[in-house]
Image (cartoon, rainbow, N blue to C red; front, side):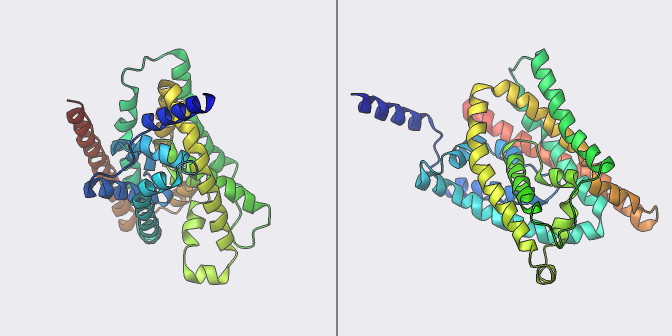
Length: 323
C-alpha cells in the first residue's frame, strides 16, 4: 500500500515536471543557440546565459534538466545535448574572438557587452510583474545591487589577491574549484555574467591570455587551473540548479527582486573593476583611443537596442502562446 502511494507520488512529480522532449528541429536549434550563448557567457563580458534562457523560455527546463540529471539521466541528457554542443562552440569562439578583440579595442568590447546586459535587463524585470514590493523585497534588491559593486571596489582598492597563473602554490587550486562553482552560479542566476565576476576578482585577463598552445607548453600546470575550474563548474551546475528550482518555486518574487539587483549591479561593475582600471590607466586620448571610445559608445547603444528587441520578440511570442 505504502509502496503504491510512493509510486503515485513519484509519477505525479514527473507529470508536474517540464516537458523536455524536442518536438521539432526548430526546438533543437533554439536549444543549440541557447548553449552557444551560455558558452559565450563564460568568457564574453556582458552575456548572461540564464537571462538568454529566460528570453528563449527555456530557463525552467534547463534548471530541471541539470538538477535531475542523476535521477533521470537519459531524459535530461537528451535535452541537454544540443545545449552542450552549442556551449562548446560558443566557448571556443568566445576565447578566440575575445582574446584578439580585447587586444585591439578593449573599451569597445566591454561597452558592447555591457549594452547586451542592459538591453536584456527587461527580461529580468518582466519576472516581477504582479509581485508587490515590500520593505523586505526592496532590501533584497539593494543587497543584490551592492554585492557586485562591493566586489569590484574591493578588487580595485584591496587587490584581487589572485597571483599570476605561472608557478601557483598548491593551495590556489582549490580556490579555482570554488571560482568554477561561482561561475556556475552566474550561469544559473539570470542577469549575472561569469566574465563580470572574473573581472571583479581580477583574473579575467590572465585566464584569457593563457589560452594558447605556446603558453600551455611553457606553463603546463595551467591545465590544472582549467581542470579545477571545470570541476567546480560541473559541481555547481548540478548542485545549484536544484536549489534554484526549489527557491524559485517557493519564493519567486523575493528571488527575482534579488536577481534584478544583482543584474543591475553587474552592469555597473563592468565599467569599474581591476581589469577595467588597467584599461583606463593605459588609455590615451589619441586617434586610436578616441576611435575605441566612440566605437564603444555606439556599440553599447546598438547592443542594448538589439538585446531589447529580442526581449520584445520573445515577449510577444509568449503573449501569442497564451492567447
